[in-house]
Length: 153
Image (cartoon, rainbow, N blue to C red; front, side, top):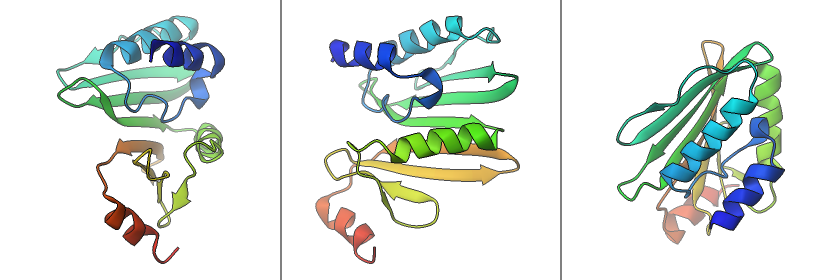
């Protein structure tokens, strides 16, 4: 697991990081955020931590963005959210996400997608009051529900 995390850490750009943190443990994500925060010239905000969450607000090229992670009782990431006010940054991240072949994203409506069954991730995109968000949620869908969601697609 640590080898996979290091691979992601060194070979994926921070801005395009998407759904790779789902399933990772809290400390690995915190280390990842800390390391990348030090690489961001405009970032001086600390990581905000609670019993079940981590969040980080940064600026990249003058554009505000936020990353948020929620953890289960075993400290595994079950929700990852990326928010920005930049349509360009949002589109870039969203397109990069959909092109990751290992997830085989399938649209279930205008703003939701599901990964292949073995990954069991729901992707939701939204734009509210000028803030674009991409949210990845680890689900516990059974095959019946999974196929029901895809039935009319």
